Length: 102
Image (cartoon, rainbow, N blue to C red; front, side, top):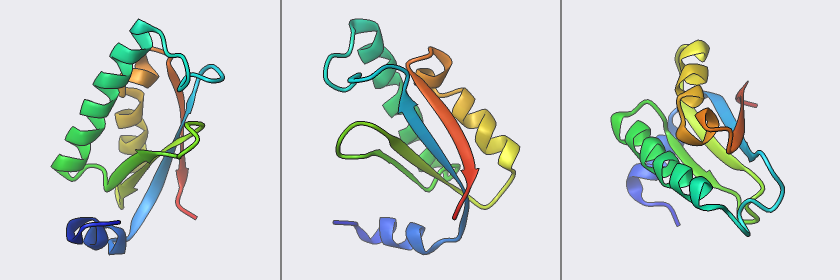
């Protein structure tokens, strides 16, 4: 269930979505210690982007196969640069693709 702030953010027009996919199958079932460390840094990084308004929301799919991040309207290159700085992307734990919103 979404809280009031999340509902307001979803009503806000967005322009870019980032799709994060693990670099190896079953990552979510048996992560290594290094991957867990990267994942912790990744979660903190995404929380900071949402808190600062640079990202609208982010979260995983239930099956662990994909994560999605939603960016507000703005510079596409900036969204791409932010995702390349994500600790999981920078450490090769996840791949990221930023696309225009459908």
